[in-house]
Image: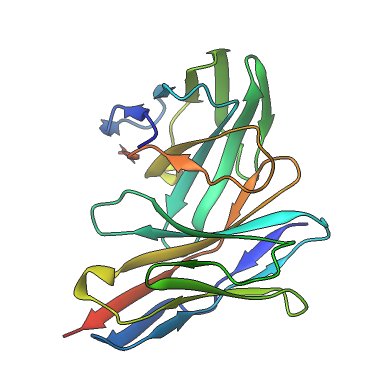
Amino acid sequence: DAGITQSPRHKVTETGTPVTLRCHQTENHRYMYWYRQDPGHGLRLIHYSYGVKDTDKGEVSDGYSVSRSKTEDFLLTLESATSSQTSVYFCATNTDQGVDTEAFFGQGTRLTVV
Amino acid sequence: AQKITQTQPGMFVQEKEAVTLDCTYDTSDPSYGLFWYKQPSSGEMIFLIYQGSYDQQNATEGRYSLNFQKARKSANLVISASQLGDSAMYFCAMQSTGNQFYFGTGTSLTVIP
């Protein structure tokens, strides 16, 4: 199994507070992604990274920022959490081998904003 | 724009029967990959099967097969001999140039004993 670890696994936070989720991989994969999963919406891409310090926005990036200072770590920050950001967040990674390798997922982080 | 569509929010199948989960996609990229993932109630994402856009044969992995019809832009998952442990959420996904993955909204499959 790909070594992808998300922390924390569960978090409850208050509206307006900043929150940082961490994704750590031991696979040396070039690409890393943050998705959110909501009922009826499937998985939607928030941000992704194609290398150290190289990141780009996905389809639902408003209110989120990311950083990647090392190959193995990809951080997702909710700058000022809102109730609409209550969701399950998944980190995923992928090699740089074209379109024929699957995405490897972390275990997910359940975030509740109250 | 890339898009994955799963039109079956929920499906039921009798144990030991086969079931087909539908997936259609939209892309203008000539090269792309299609994937199916399973998400059981425990929440993890489990990779099931892959089909490349240039593959001539449909992919198979044990009881899973992918019915790939390129002209119709469909990539349906067929599960044969359903088991109770197949009850889960199933997601279709596409990867195209740019290395982004696009996911459908998922199909919840329930296997009835």
